[in-house]
Image 1 (cartoon, rainbow, N blue to C red):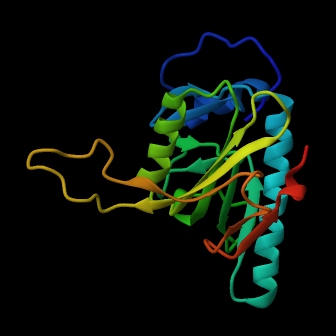
Image 2 (tube, rainbow, N blue to C red):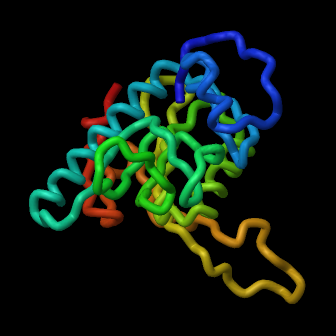
Length: 217
């Protein structure tokens, strides 16, 4: 999430949601709580916001087209909204750049991870591999079935690549005594660049077709 530049206050290592709510909004919106641990969101450039907005709109159009053909289906597509882990409590959450989730039965409901179909991140040059891997692992542990990564070009305002991942919660055969660090992980199932395709096309979680022209800055 890209946020205005603001001086970070000296906060405790761990906080509750109730404590987070007492902070000024411009501070609180830059923080995720990972099992109560304060994790600061890295600020991205203006392009980060632009491409997050463009991709969210494109996914929303694909979802709308599918719901028109299959009225029994209902999804919402939104950007930069908290996703809470577990069935209750709010002190463990992340804020994907964009996400697709099942329509709630009532208005103004918190989004729980078990209702999220797809979570996505727009990666800016400021993101480190550790940041990416740890957040992806949290999505996988929560059982979110689809994960997308959008990588931006470094030398121009453009998307370099979009990658789609599917959840794998049954790791393959390993040597005796060897165990995966993360029991659930994501497998790469799709990769698109403007150089080798005219559009992003995927079948899950619903049919998606996004021409690159819809994502131009």
